[in-house]
Image 1 (tube, each protein chain N blue to C red):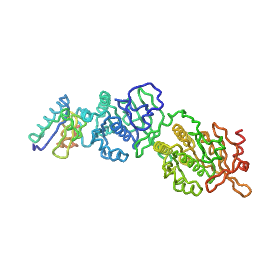
Image 2: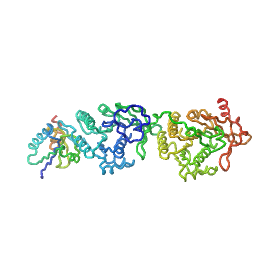
Image 3: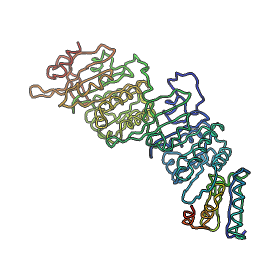
Image 4: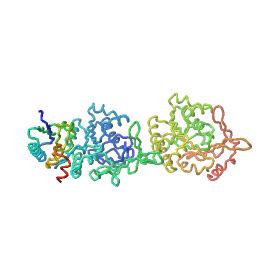
Length: 99
Length: 492
């Protein structure tokens, strides 16, 4: 895949948090990155060894693999503003102003 | 091994394999439970945890997982390698698994609910991969710097420790000492099974490491602070005060090396496994007398360990050769070993531990410490006395005959300098130089010798080309030494 935004969502099973995070992520991407993103879901229960590479500790964790540098956002992604800041789609200053 | 096991079998223990630590915990850490190890920076907590894992893997067939949260995780392997642990090899053999989790707050955005399931998954995966029975988490408090939501973190840590118990994992969790609490984040609130505290103090430029078992649920444990040492062999804890006065008292006698002196000691010399104090002012022949003692022991085929605190072994052997006592031949035969160290190089505890180790390794029949008074430069009188008490206990337990020389200051009275240590000694011999009619004479006197009739005479001696020779009793000049005369009167 040659998406501009390569995103990977780490979860452990179909927990409510994981489902929420995935739903939130899809919504944010459709709204702000239509046609420019790819989402790969990694379930650590199936592939525990994959947690090492991205230093996964908290779940769910969203990793922006592309564009560089790697960014991480942990949580169920319920705060869209913070997710956008985490993905570098919005300035941090704007977030503060919004609060 | 717990030598003084008093309590009935309690909870199951997982031995750490750290010499001494398993003694003060009566067998090790609580098996299948987490133990908190807290201490300041450089207190040795990481090394303690690594020793626990390495020994588990090598000696007790319990593979281990090391999960480190420290930033410079790669330095860990180098650090422990310098202490003789080859982690890489254990990793290759699937006896150890090292996993790094580094959390950098600056690169993480937090939004909404999360948990630390990722940590659990990785830990469980690692444990299953090698069938681990032991886990070390080093230092989990680092997470408090990496994650913002301390509420979640605390709840998850609580869950983690419960998880470790449920999985019957014996774990060491290291933590930084807090200002008021044992740990900065109050982790002791969650880990109630066992808490060990490490301390590294520097007093008058001499550092001492100490370990204390603060809490051990369901088990008796030594409650004192115990000194420990980190050297090229790893950690050694000295369970010094757990020793009891139980050593055997052999009735066998050993020669002092001088038949005339043996004569003064009930005709047979010292008791084996007894302690002998040899005191006198500078240049009175204390080292030469020790050399005679050592020479005689080696000639019987016994092994001698000689601690020098003032001279180098070469210098001592040269001086003894010129005094007519050749001890070098015993070194060459492997019966005599020297350990020379400046007292000021280490703290007393370190000296003590090094002596222990040297004795354990060489397994001597005779130990000489020459002169113990030099140790006074390192500690207070009480400290030195406490240390000697431990040394003596240790040597007696091993059935070792020990001779200590003590340099008496010319400006202080005998009692003042030595009253503190003389009570620890079974035999006390004084040597002195006395001047009379423009001639210097050397005198020797047995001040006390427990459990035997000993001579009350003050005998003269001189140096010959074959060492020291005592002169016949009648040439004594007791009155020339005021201190001796006074003591002699008081004894009767």
